[in-house]
Length: 312
Image 1 (cartoon, rainbow, N blue to C red):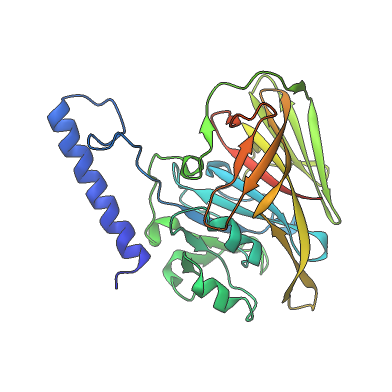
Image 2: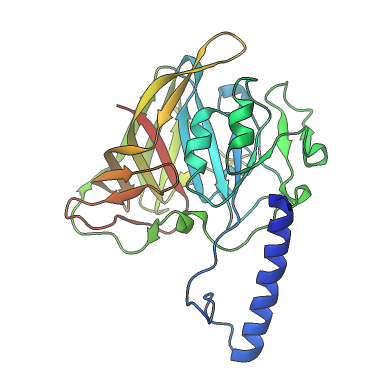
């Protein structure tokens, strides 16, 4: 049976051939839809679990992600699940271990690749059974390296091209039904919002001159590895139930599980405004739908989306 990486390489080759044939027949470089169905191509998703304690900052390659999920982990700290498709940087990291929350989030995508440093032994069977391509260093040693400028465990990085995994030009957000379009009517002006975990804090401040929500972590401006500010076009503050799981870290601390199947409220920040919406995801196999107060799908600003899982 072909592996997900084999299917990915085959699909990429077929997609490239289709584009060549389509361009030759049409004589135009216009549309990205297939002539038979008129539907947009699906993205090829790479998800990377990224460390987010102070010693792991600044991250490398996070600014290229289509979606940045923020989740609570042990002792109230945070970690990031970065989802790539439209652009894939040459290096991503620092890479850390997977959690149960990641597996439920990634069920929204079509057989994504999950790059992570490892996992608690009790969680490994769940990872292996999940509909994804699990890719720890033991399965792809050439794709990972340790940096000499940081101490372990905050110095493990991924080279996506070694998987191999390349940019597709298709935004992963579109795979799960998020639509980039003009903002809906309404909303209230917002200069910024802050989300606090027991041991972590995120602030998103609107910068009209950049059309971005600038990110701060634990009271400090969050930066890229090259020194620029991290910023999001859209920020989703999604209220979720955070429950103790049956898994523990090496220190014996219980791992929290953020439930993203269900329904609840959320705030969507875009274009200097905040919109009250509801979210709903009926099954693990379905995508999360965000709906405005008038019952219409919420639209998102073009660019990176941060989805922060906020404990109710």
